Image (tube, rainbow, N blue to C red; front, side):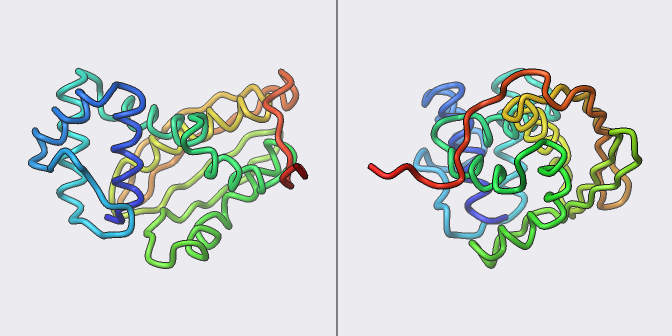
Length: 195
């Protein structure tokens, strides 16, 4: 698993629950307290060991932990760059959803050896969608539920999200857009302001 993914898990645990929790998780997973280096690759078993240690340490179900990770990746100030990348997908939540098919390729342009899940949006009309998350490692679907929930808030949209399970290497998420402009949403500008 790419170090960026592992480092994201580490930063999420440290920023959300504190350094002491991260130190305990790292120890339980037989990982040094310095944790992961973002540009290295690690065995998938180590990533799983960290997630298992975190669920044990926090007494939290795996799917809830991964969903919280997805929310963190979009909403925490320390990872603002990911939010910006996702917001380039469109000016509305619906445009953002339709841009998800291209996210894998956009991420690979920035980090060629990053193994991101392949995303496939199916539009069922009447604001109903299914997002298919293709990846050999389970859990990305739950993280995507968190990402989608945070992005809906970011756009001011009201959505219902339901993780529908995993079949072979594909997880599916049902998305129902109830109100595109439910709230104002967070401010976002494509360009940086001149100082």
